[in-house]
Length: 223
Image (cartoon, rainbow, N blue to C red; front, side):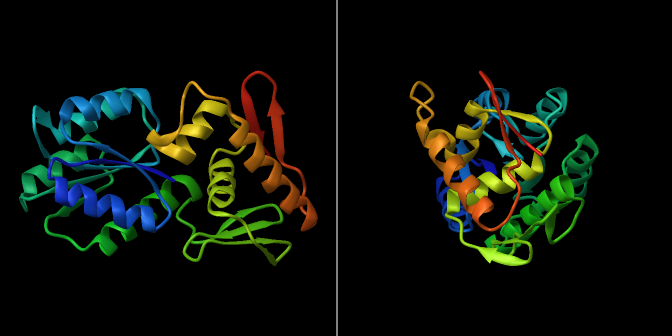
């Protein structure tokens, strides 16, 4: 899953990024309000962690922008102030949660997981699609109740497909979701074809159906 971290303190920003990437998230960064606005207008995210106090702007205005864009991202506001007014303002604008600094990174991770389960999988701790079962807490995938071994990218790809089942997902959206800022937008998408080919092969070998359908000239549909 893809997370945008909007935080002006370099040390905290780096700590959050390192911790979340270790948990398997793709992280992108914004250090001030203009960077944050550029990011949310250009890319889609599963969750956004936004500090209220930002250079050149305010994190609450980022939340407003996200709602104008009708973004489906989960939003967690973080602030150095334990202010009831800020908390209520953020939640009323459409944020999903609020954390006061300092906080444990494990708590931030737990709250991100809870938001993603609620938004993408109706709050379930287990994700089910026909014969496929995914347990995000342990990153376990089962087909017909038998575990299969996926690489990190294959796992993220499957989870993203199921979260967006029956929707057409473009190749550029897949690349951005799986690699974030690291992928070359001008390059080929051969790496996507390779991961999809390998994921499809493993699912079929486990007795699963081929749910990944190519939408020619656009991308893929799952389901």
